[in-house]
Length: 222
Image (cartoon, rainbow, N blue to C red; front, side, top):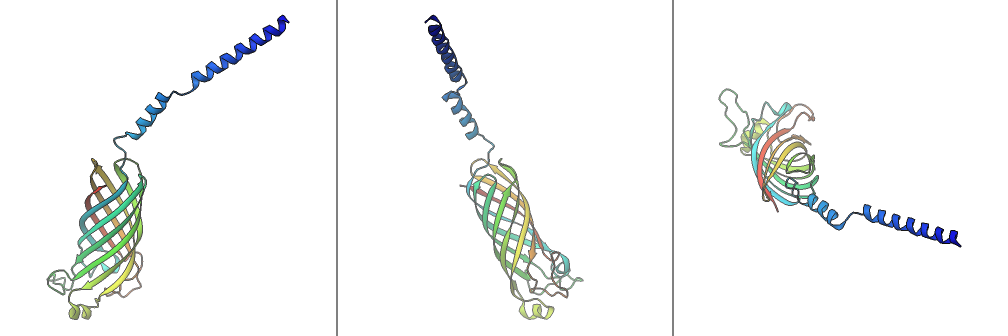
């Protein structure tokens, strides 16, 4: 009988010690709440949501297009959405104006003002490399654009024509979010043109016959 009672007391003592040990290792509600607050209140975390930007810069052409088209101005507008700090999608307008190098001796073109006017739209995927407000990123997608030659008679004589074409943009950028509303964005891109029927060419178009651009944009995230 004494052995039975002693065995019961020992079992009760062991059960009580195990229960107290479990309570000691159980995280308190206060510590869980503190950890959550620390994650949610990072001041350098990138903002997500809808963003819009306006920008401008310069663009030029490469390969067999470079000798006949001088570098010019580029401009554009972007509407994007970032569901997470690391990923985003963009819809954008892209435009540019350039002069045709008609006569290298006097620098004359084929019209007064810009000779070649470009307007297009593009859909892009953006991959951000960090989740901080300073974000390097890569971008690619697809676009469609129209080329308008300002002087038809003289332009056609030189082999320039109005045209609509597609392109694949690929670029690198650096974005910085200043406060809750202001975003500054610097981007360089190379655009692979599907064809170059707007300009005279004697060779089949290749990847090296494209358009490069560098733009600086300012906007905000909302």
